[in-house]
Length: 272
Ligand code: SF4
Ligand code: MG
Image (cartoon, rainbow, N blue to C red; front, side, top):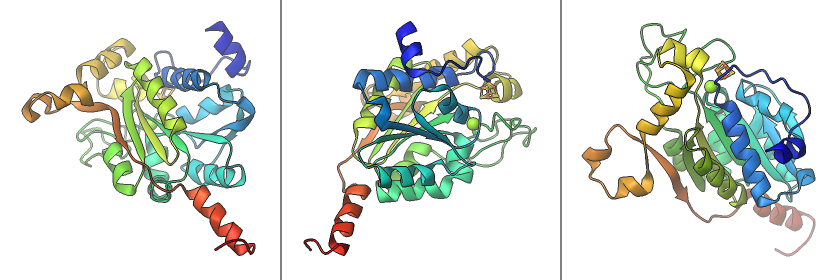
């Protein structure tokens, strides 16, 4: 632990996350994945948008970019096109990725560009005071929905798959080891990879929805999820209401920066 802290984190504590926030668990899972893969820190770039989770790159000892709200993916796309040999990891929140950045999300997936997007899904806009996001569950409470959110939530996994992402996974802060393993696989996947990390926000979402102490949010994740492998052995009615976790989708498809390099070669008078 000490070694990981020294190697991968900037000596800039304290951080701004509330006590009991799950963001530290997701960030640690990413760091462990990077360490396990032995990535070159000078060739690993971490990009974020705006929000509680998007503060994470500021604590990490890599080349990092803290961009505008919802716009992490366009910045990351530019970095990947300029430095195709770099691993580019994007940290985003549920509102950042699926509302303000929703357009960028579907088009990065459609292009199959080799970026890894980790969505810290705490079901709410935490930093700005607890407004509902497209991932706030139906009828859950938010400051902008004190009687319950009438919108239906996106299923981020299905949205990513439908838009063309070639690696899609979901896990939770309760399942931190699995989360880290899935992040490692996503980083090594050649194409657009998305990992939805379900995380607890005890202050905004938890309080408004009377979910109890931070440990109770972790217990909620344990009790309301099921692995895709376990679900496959059960009847549909036995998994009704449970959230699937694990590797949800993986396929091989042409990668955008490689395809773009071919076009540049042609334009420069190379082979057709
Ligand atoms: Fe974490 Fe929620 Fe606090 Fe933001 S508001 S730091 S997500 S607990
Ligand atoms: Mg959020």
